[in-house]
Image (cartoon, rainbow, N blue to C red; front, side, top):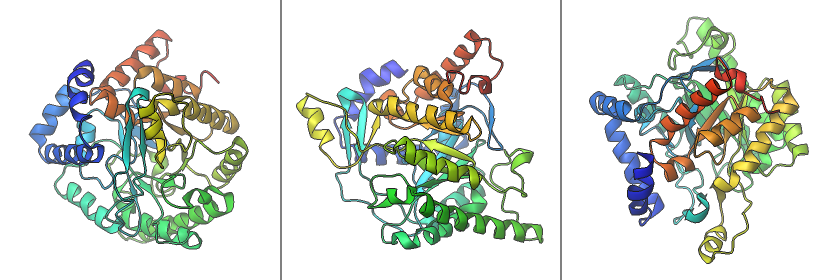
Length: 390
């Protein structure tokens, strides 16, 4: 099926505007997600085999997740589990609704299997997203895998008020989700990456922890239970600890700056690191078409990012001695790239650009390939492979 997508379907799709195709695809997946029958048929055709792993107190049916940015506000939420994903990261969502940057804002570098985007956190705002997610719950269409939310800063919010901005989104979305990712590494919101500074990030994490403590205190006093997400949590993530908060880092950070961030993450008990976001770097290109795409402003994702993101994953694993779980992102198109990330230190991986280039069969193929590699190495479970190359 992946071959048919690459040879027959993808060439047709790639003749059309990237954002228009994305919007049409999301509408189709949203329609499919509303029907148990259709979702069941999709799951029967694309569903991935089981390869469970426990990470930051949650049980994941397999380690391959949907990366943030594809389903910004959960409009197709049930469909992702049907397509075989072991978890979903929605967003990025900001407190204020915002249109993002003006189009065109997505560009394909087809020869390099890459994408340049400058979306700019386009979303309807945290409160509207919460309503969308609540409707999926009301209609009993919530997926049976962990669902997280990527949180960004509103463009109109000054950096000095960033902590408050993140905390507001966190509070309104908290009852609905299993984990949260603090995005301070997108290259498409002006000055956002300055929030990767240790002191600025500490303020954001402190504000979110204060929200979490207040919600847990209300729950302990007999208020509404805030940890209601999927029922997939293990005992380790029950009310005494709250929900996992992760931080997403840029591949362009120096290792010295990354080490400072990791020091903070360990002191603040950050649940995990997502490595990495898109890059401002560009690979060398002699092809005029590629040169034109790479001249566009925005973050680069896809195959050219693979090696650097794996390097960052390996550094984090070694620096923390494996104490902080890592979600590896960047250039994953097959089981080989997923295995590379896992053996470098990632407990979980995410796919976005790989889904665009390889089609919906890629998730099942990756999970099957990972199972085969575990068997070849005589490993009983996925956790044994994490960081084995370091």
